Image 1 (cartoon, rainbow, N blue to C red):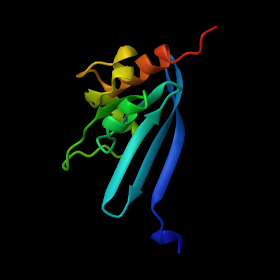
Image 2: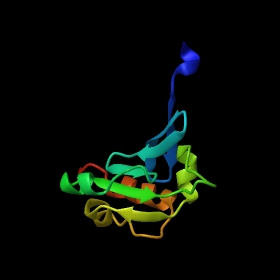
Image 3: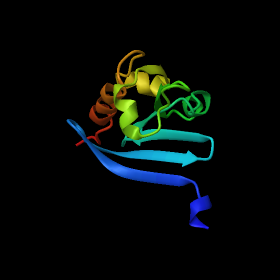
Length: 114
């Protein structure tokens, strides 16, 4: 039955530097969210840093708490970045900036060369 299925949504999100895809995934007892840009992902604490570092990917992580979980991609916008890969750092992502700032830096740094 459809009521037993987990929920997965995605939508286009617009920023000063372009657009990205916001995603939310929920299941019984859990959830995660992310914002996918051309250059990489700004995501919640479910993401691992080691594997994308090994593959040279740009990932920036924000963490919610049990009392204030990050469920929807919009929740990432005000959340603070707590970790990121070296590739994300090369795009100007720093610990302590907001998720929105991280997305905008990925959009600016992830533009294809003209």
